[in-house]
Amino acid sequence: MLKKEEWLLIQDLHSKGFSVSEISRRTGYARKTVRKYLNLKTAPEPQKRPGRKSKLDPYKPYILEKLNEGPYSAARLFREIQKMGFDGGETIVKDFIKEVRPKQGLPAVLGYDL
Image 1: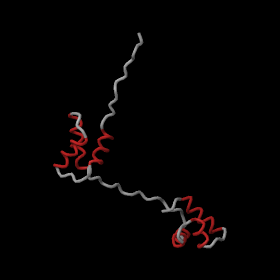
Image 2 (image 1 turned 90 degrees about the horizontal axis):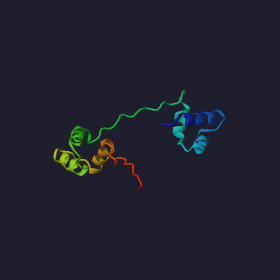
Image 3 (image 1 turned 90 degrees about the vertical axis):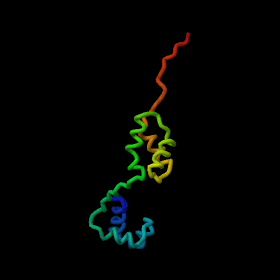
Image 4 (image 1 turned 45 degrees about the horizontal axis):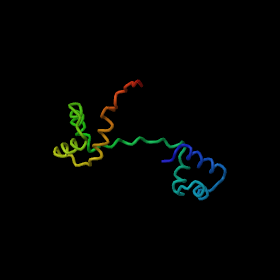
């Protein structure tokens, strides 16, 4: 799907008298694509794609529950959900845990030089 600016460029070149072939050469789009967008009366609107479901979605509540119980490692949680039927990779589990685990840093300590 072309952006509005690209559609305007094609329309502008056509109004200046350029042929479909010349517009195609200048823009890098196929002649068929140029013709298609010259026939449109208004700029194409971007269409929203439906979100994809993750293999991890059914296991997220379990992972969150375990993380609230205590400090579980991603590797351990991965092994546990694998036993429950998860057939995805360990990386997706690690990435999810990285997002949801609270950022734990060292508490700030004010030091004094004596």
